[in-house]
Image 1 (cartoon, one colour):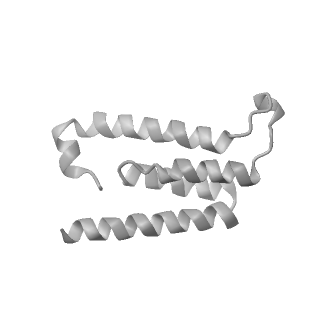
Image 2 (cartoon, helix red, strand yellow):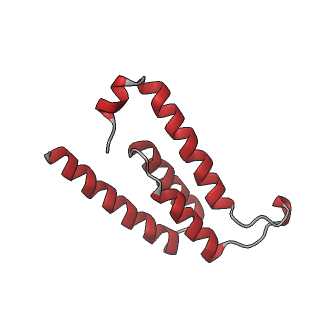
Image 3 (cartoon, one colour):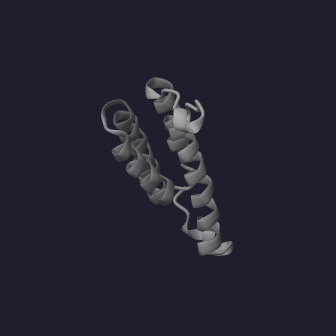
Length: 102
């Protein structure tokens, strides 16, 4: 029980830090922190949502992507899906439920 409380505080702290990074830090710093959180926490969908917020605030249509504006959101969504697939493959089913951080 105590472990779950610590993980919840860690997750809340990570989301607050990620919110600050979205608003005040360069993209690469936010991206590195978001990817680290996606690997550490289970189902860290908050990074994908904050990627969408980042694109809505700072995104401009890119000509090299044919006017597509949601680049951060797409990158974070792809990394989220890949990290979930790798977590399940690496930890192999039954061990996945025991070792997850949620």
